Image (tube, rainbow, N blue to C red; front, side, top):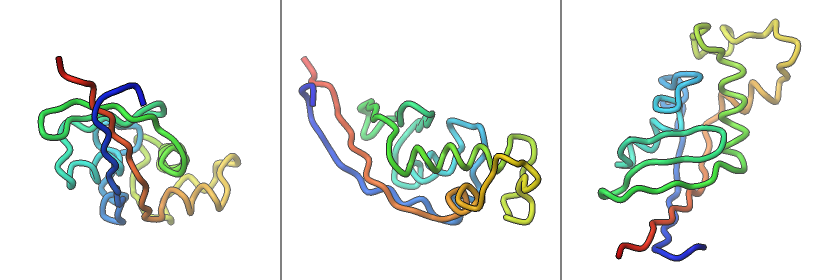
Length: 121
């Protein structure tokens, strides 16, 4: 920790978040939608970090663990422009995709988000 307030949030990414998520979108991916439901403003999710505002305070948390694996698999399985978040419509003909990728990209999950808010002053 670098100083400042630390908060841990349990984030639940639901089947609805996955079905409504947009592949390749940092603001509308399933994790961002889950954060919006929790009251996080301006969520932004990329391969490096999860960012947003909570109660007016900005935060950034490193992307890690299953959340990182999920985003990687989600974007790969549901390629931009080839939407239809149904396993029958994924890019199954892609030789780089395995059953693990498809399962990861289509299964709801929960992860802990550690928010560090910089000290004010």
